[in-house]
Image 1 (cartoon, rainbow, N blue to C red):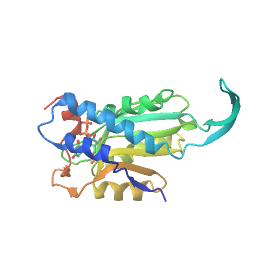
Image 2: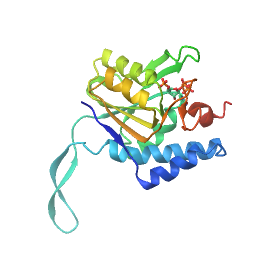
Image 3: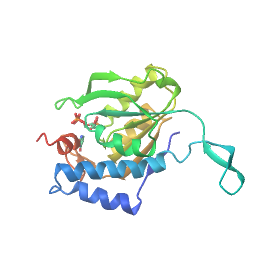
Length: 209
Ligand code: PRP
Ligand code: URA
């Protein structure tokens, strides 16, 4: 069973509190999301395998470790997932980026797909699906189903804030996927928004409301 990791490092908690504040504007919101994504990437990659190599320092030869294993793919769910891409690429600059476009129908809350462009070798990569909000879990679950239909097997999910409903949905649909969140909030409201949450992540990122 995949694990739920709540990354409650003090720097992450502090920056997330600033993001939640309704008086924080788009510029600061974007900067904070990128910074938190970078801090989260540090934990999401904790189990990456290493191999031993020999190098020469200016002083002597030594055995040391470098990353081995699969190459990485970062998969933002559009739109709001875009806000986490640069933070992760800061730490994993060689990662390829694949985009999955989904929006949540405001009436049914069901995800509707409108775009997909993945690296051609996505199935050989370790994939990190990113989206700031895991609310009903419909969007993340649909994106991951989509990846699995394309033979991707090595998938993690990183979100800023999750509702218990979204975590349950992911557990049911994708029990193999590890989930990384900065905070697990109380619940969803009647419109499917996370409470207390931070409002509409896409609108706050891009200033569309
Ligand atoms: C938001 C968010 C997630 C989704 C979460 O996107 O970024 O993708 O809702 O909700 P769910 O867990 O109930 O599916 P939205 O549909 O608002 O699209 P946007 O990113 O384009 O604003
Ligand atoms: N999408 C958002 O952007 N925010 C929520 O609280 C729920 C879904």
